[in-house]
Image 1 (cartoon, rainbow, N blue to C red):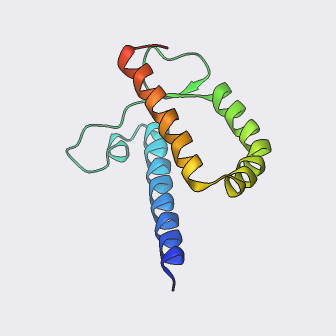
Image 2: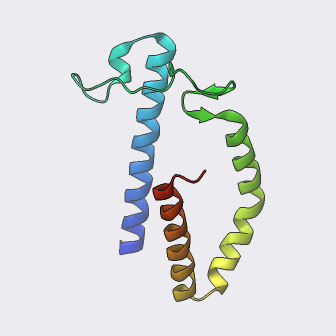
Length: 113
């Protein structure tokens, strides 16, 4: 098995693990079972479902209208991004990502919303 295939299998397994943990925690919140909302016994309960000061139409910290918008636009633009990513030089892509991360970091440090 090649290294790309191994990495792909590992990423898939980790994604399934995280998704499974999320389902268990959501079930714990829905069934009001505090044991299911903890990763390990004795740790702090995973918050979100009963959070206060969140906008209406939120599921914990997830704002559902924004999630629907992101999913809808991603479905239409994923192909464009994949094709563009194959055409653009890797160094240019890395530079673009680095610039984006620097801009986001500056906004976070300055507290700009």
